[in-house]
Structure formats: structure tokens, C-alpha cells
Length: 409
Image 1 (tube, rainbow, N blue to C red):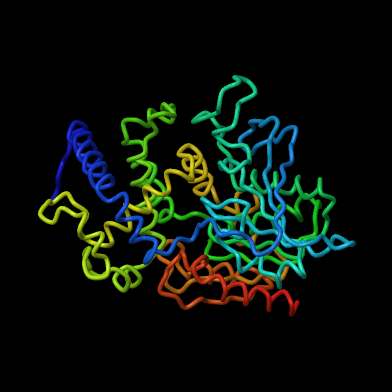
Image 2: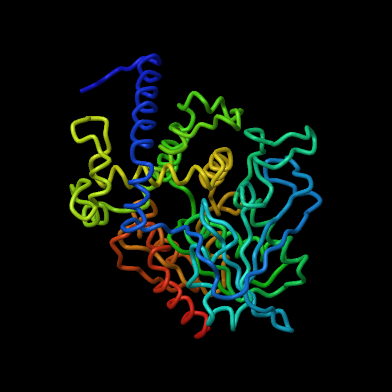
């Protein structure tokens, strides 16, 4: 069946979606939250650290980008855990994923446990283009004295890692025990290994890329484009020049919901939600529902997606999301390096490559290819029902593997 829709039809469908989402979000604002508190995992939380964390910022006068543009007065926000050894040789760099931030204890606390921070000085920076303190679309453009918004320049993962290297140079760190990261963080990890040796600026001794690939494929680009289109179709987006008082919340919420489907698996969704509705143990949710309305949220999986989309609005910036999704799509470690195989073959450090057997977004074959072409790699496969998000949801196992890997080097 082929269905042709005019621009008018698409706009009308978008308006219907916005209207339905507004109704269901308002109707379930309190009930969904109470249900979610009991039954919906959240990889990003407000957990307080069990030990000290130090936050700081570093100002870089300028940063030359791969595009040829120059960013001035670049701020890099970072957090550290543990104590730097007198020889400054116990440094572990953690690279966060797409919507992460420097406060690692709130989502990857297994890597900043007492055992880790007693031995290592762990540092995590907010990636360039994000919205947690590092220069990004929300920052003030010194040329206009207004926020960059959609005019923030195109930045690559290589640009972001180069900024991070400048921070560690400023801190007087020359030797890094390991660089570790999952998803977008894993892509940064690979760039760390390559840039550090290309620019002879730092000694990266080991790398642990998790749930990532050597380049973004058409599959990952397609998911990112779906999310960007959801945002663009929101009439309030205005090509990124939206009124801060009326942000494109519906489009942004839908983008996050699309992402949440790609991060998990058929098995996880069916096992957790099945065809359950708001009933039984979730009587409060049921009582607030309109049982006969076709527009109402009735299945728990619908409630989960709406909840995740709504919650996300308060913690991330839409233009940063667009910026970082384009950054991820630019990922190609072989660019200007003679191709992927040549780039990977040049990484001589011991590498622990970790993949998830059920990852839909970054299939295990991509980590197998990484391990095959890295000269000194060990491949570990995580058996999990959670898909891509297992690198967050099952972090204890990944932390244990990484700890053993570093101890045996």
C-alpha cells in the first residue's frame, strides 16, 4: 500500500499528535510519575555521591574546528573523583554518552565507587556542544552577545576530544591510565587514542570503547534523522530560533521517545510491559484514566514513553540535541587517516572492547569488527536483555570487567 500525503496532511497529523500528547500528558502528569517511580528504570538520576566530587571549569581562549571555523572563549566543564597521584599517573578519563554530563555518580556510579576512586583519579568533561556547562548552543556568542542557538558551528567528535586534551594539558597530566566510554563516549575513546598519538601530546595507555562503532552507519544516522525530523515538525521549533518561553516540547518529547525504543529491545519491552494496562498494582494510574477514550494512555508502555519524553524536557536543550546528533553522524575514525582499517591498526594500546549481544542500535558485529582490527584488543560480550542501554543499566558487570582488565595490564 502506497500512501501519498501532502504537506498540509503532515502538518495536520502533527497538530493532532500535539493535541493528543498535551491531553494525555496533562491527564497522567501525576499518575505516570507515581507509576514510573516504582517500575521504570532511569539511567540518569539525582543520586548523591557516596564520596567527594569536585566540579570546575576551564577556559580555552580559542579552538580551531575541523570545519575551519574557530570557537572563541571555549568553556569546558568537568568533574573529578579521587586524588591525583604525586606522579600524576593514575588518571582515568570517562567519556559520557549523548545526554550525559560530568557528574558520573548520577548515571555510571560503578566507575566512581570507593574502589575506583581509592586507586584512580577519575575525570569526566561535559562534551563540546552540550548544555551542562561546556560551550554549546545555549552559550553566548561573543560576536553577537546572544546565545548561539541554531547558529552554533558544526563540531565533530575529534573537535570535542581535542578540547578535552587541552584541559588535561592544562592540568599538567601527560599519562592516562585509561580512557573509557560507552556509545558516544566510546566514539570519543577511539578518537582519544588516535589524537593523543598523532599530536604526540599525551600517553594514553589503555582504552575501553563500549557499545560503539568505528563510524556511524546508515542505520544509526536513520534513527538520528527520525528524531531530528520529529523536532523540526514541531511548529514551535522555528529552525531552532524558538521562543524560550514556548519551546518545541512536543517534537522534542517525541524525539526522545523514538530514541528510547532504539536503546532497548523487543525482549525487554515485552517482558517489562507486555500488554499491561493501568490496573492491579497500578490502581492509582487506572483511576485517573479515561477508559473509553481512544486518545487516552491505556497501555503501560505508552505511559513509559510519554513519561520519558516529558521528563527529558527539563534536563536537556533541544539545540544541543541537534548539535550532538549531527556530531555523532560525523563519526568516522578513518576520515583523513587512510580509512578505518589503517586507523584502527595504528592504535597499539591494549583495548578492551565491550559489546551487548542484544544491542539493536550498535549491533555486536560492529564491536567484533573493532576487536578484529585493533592489534591488541580483547572482546567481551555482555549477555543482556536491555539492548544498547545495558552499558548503563548493567554497569556493575562492565565496571568489573574493566577493573580486571586494567589490573592485569
